[in-house]
Length: 204
Image 1 (cartoon, rainbow, N blue to C red):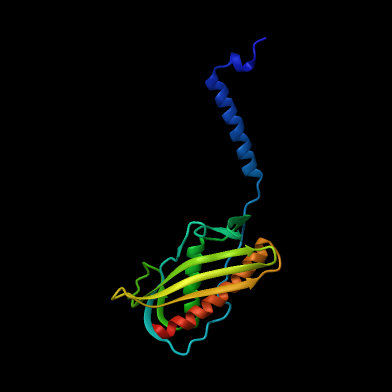
Image 2 (spheres, rainbow, N blue to C red; image 1 turned 45 degrees about the vertical axis):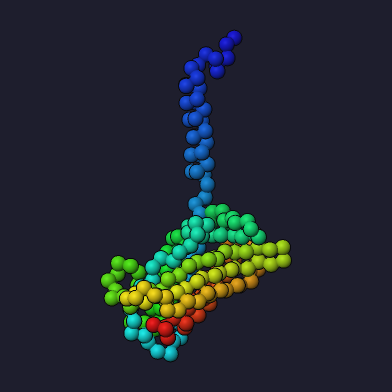
């Protein structure tokens, strides 16, 4: 008796196998739960400033390496970089941080105007940011939310950087889970945004 593999053309056999595999993939996609979305809340209260700057400030999208420039929540274990499965931010991390930076300055009422490119500002300064670290870090003895954001104030008319500072936050986290990690990252971002506003406004 001749086998099915010999009686059918090779191309047809390949097509059947491909269709079977595709069917399995589609079935898996349809049955997999959608990812849970976790937001970054930004500052809880308005950062305090001693005076209001008359400057209009542009906040471009922050720079970040590809491992951070997505909606995925980063987990680091030494040199290993991973992501929480079935968990995500509502937007890419750079755009989310950009929004929270703008909101922090708006809440403080510390500048005349602040916004994104294309919003019609008469720009005096740009606040340039680089997200160097934004991750839930796990070691054999601890768990923590780690954030590093390098900020520069650039005079838009001259193109020269007039001030720069590295902002860091490290928040202990009790357990290894996406909700706990995001809560720690929220606390760290809240700290950094308050410090950034207090640092930047007197220099604008």
